[in-house]
Length: 195
Image (cartoon, rainbow, N blue to C red):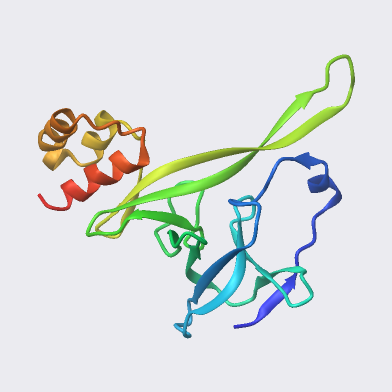
């Protein structure tokens, strides 16, 4: 593993308000590199805007890695974790290097892709344009080597998984699941993997 470079924020990026990272604070993390080297533990942040893992160097500067990363795990103080992986086929707007949070890991996986969008707005009675980072995300199903964009509603999920559409709709209704909620979405995909 080699640390690549200091992160340089451009003047244009300095003017953007809001947070570019998934979490503001450094988190303990385990990084797995694409060359199958042993995973290593670091203090990391996930820069959603650039889709890169940032490591805290010994001098407290922010650095990125030169070696490609296949996965990383963020470990919180309470013991909870978030797993992110790359190497899914390039869904629209993403590449094989894009990181997705693995919400459910099974034959059919439920993935969440975080994004930061820059929203521009004019300051009232002024020619000044204000910019801020705005959070966004998409959900994907990874099945049979393909990554499918899916909305978090039962009709979209049924369309993406037509062979079990009626069973999925019945399960949502019987269990009163709210698919807009990640936990219920995970339950539905876990159920689908049992069919």
